[in-house]
Amino acid sequence: MHEGSRSEFDLIGRFFADLGAPRSDVLLGVGDDCALLEVPVGLSLAVSIDTLVAGIHFFHDCAAEAIGHKSLAVGLSDLAAMGAAPAWATLALTLPERDDDWLAAFARGFGDLARAYGVRLVGGDTTRGPLSVTVQVHGVVRADTAVRRKGARPGDIVWVSGTLGDAGLALRLMREGGPIDQALRARLERPAPRVELGSALRGIATAMIDLSDGLAGDLGHILAASGVGAELDLEALPLSPAVASRIASEGDWLLPLSSGDDYELCFCAPSEHTGLIASMADGLGCALTAVGRIHAEPGLSLKGLDGAPMRLSSAGYDHFANNT
Ligand code: ADP
Ligand code: MG
Image (tube, rainbow, N blue to C red; front, side, top):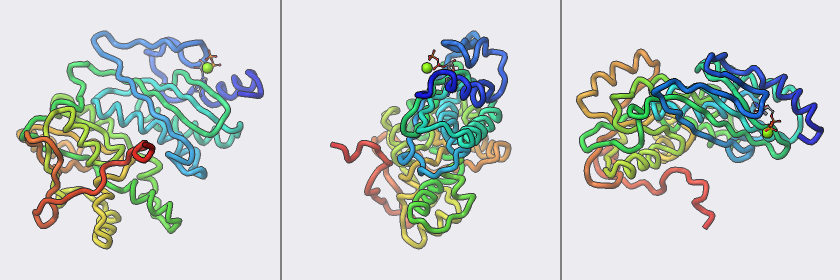
């Protein structure tokens, strides 16, 4: 940062040198030119990176603790979607100024989630500029058991975890500036990555993705990668009471189908695993709902409440959609 390296090292030492769960596979963590990490023999590294920018991915007045939580949660969600076990994270933080209260709260949000999943912060970079947070997560998985987007087969059931559209509804209500239920707001600001579910689905799911941009678009990625199509049954979509009542009053199916930030998992599995998957839900503490079926013919079709086909006017959120 601009004040010179002493204050930068002091900041790193105070807030980031000892964050997350201690791990014996961290041979060298924060403080040197590189971290040294031991990948277990026979496993592969699963790596993913995400950036959250103030004013784009979170409101400028969003609580620092929530930003810390979410910046790690979105990466853990990617690891979950591969069936990988989280291990390490690095953090590139760009801050407009040093604010120790903000940093302490950010580190608390990041650190609490990191410890919950046994993740150690092993390095990063700290710079001055408009607020932006980039987190790279590293997990481990046996490559031949990692669950990819490719692999869905005709006849597979399409499943989703949790409920859909809550984060999108929270975003909408916050933009409108009206009152918002705290639990609904937490669905946007403090998403729970489905790490245990992702791991449990290795060997069961044929294809999987985490829902960051809405079910229609994200399932579309599975379909494209797998060379198949699917029919979604709108009546089956798992909805919270808040989203269900918004749909009842405004008929807005885009909320569960193409609003972002749910960080639930969408996966496909052969129908013979239906009983097994249904029985997994209790132990995992999140609902698992069959919402459709894979078929050979490419494309995504929607079955409406009356059983008739429906059309979706726009797909999932796309950052560059209007920048032609
Ligand atoms: P270098 O100049 O070699 O890139 P830095 O001065 O950027 O080193 O960082 C010093 C040490 O602090 C490195 O080990 C780096 O990984 C770590 N570090 C810097 N910023 C952060 C951060 N925000 N979170 C965690 N570790 C950090
Ligand atoms: Mg650096």
